[in-house]
Length: 218
Image 1 (cartoon, rainbow, N blue to C red):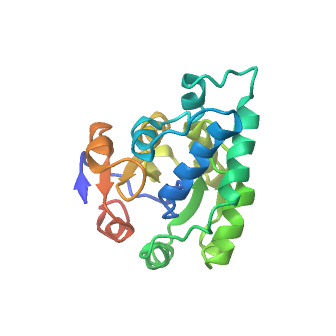
Image 2: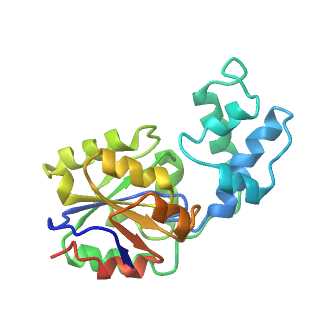
C-alpha cells in the first residue's frame, strides 16, 4: 500500500469501479472493447497497444480510429460493447475481494458501485458470486463518475471527504478528485502501478486485502 497524502476524515462510504477492480476481467474487457472495431471492419488493435491507449471516455479510441459519430453514436458503441462483453466467458471476482467486503461491512462502511458498466451486466454477476448484498447503492452506466460519486454520497447524506473511490484507471483517480473524494488506485486491473502513481491518488493498493491497512476507517 502506497500513501500519497494524509487523509484525516474517516470514510463512511466506499465506492468501487467494476471492470478490473471488483472483477478480474481485464483481458475479457479488452477483448470486448477490441471487438467493436470488427463491427465496423476496422482492424483490431494488439492487446498491449489497446491497454496502453485505452482511457476514459473509453469511446474516444473509436473516434481516433475512424469510427465517426455518424457511423455510431456513443449509445450504440456502448450497446455493442455490452453485447460483446456478455459473450465472453463469465468473469470472476478477485480472490481476496469477498473477505475484504466482509471486513468493511463489519466496520459499518457502506459500499456502493460507480461504474460505466451497465447494471444489467454487473448485478447478475454480483448475485452469482454472492456479492450483491454487500452493496447498498448502484450507479451503473455512468459517463461522468465525479457526478455519480456526488449522487452517491448525497444519497446517504455524507460529505465528499467521507467518501472514497477505488478504481483501476488513471481517470478513476481524476474523477474521485473532481468529486472531492479520497482516491484509491487499484493496481490489479488495467493501468499499472507507474501509470496510476503518476495520477497521484490518495492511496495505491496492489490487492483488495490492502484496503484493510488504509488509515481511513474507524
